[in-house]
Image (cartoon, rainbow, N blue to C red):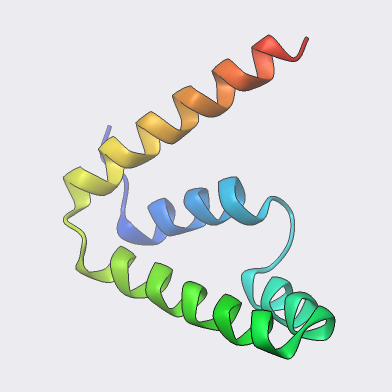
Length: 78
């Protein structure tokens, strides 16, 4: 089953940021430290650029790998 880049981005955001909006995460980090907030903003910008330039097949493979790791780590915690 093929997924769009927009769907891949949403799924990766859920894995990385959980329930938090990525921009809110940047603002939270900024509130703790402007230096770290600047780095967080740059990381989010790089994440979004990588999603745009990465071929769809590679995004799907990346998602499969991360979700498999995520599910395995959750099953080990129970």
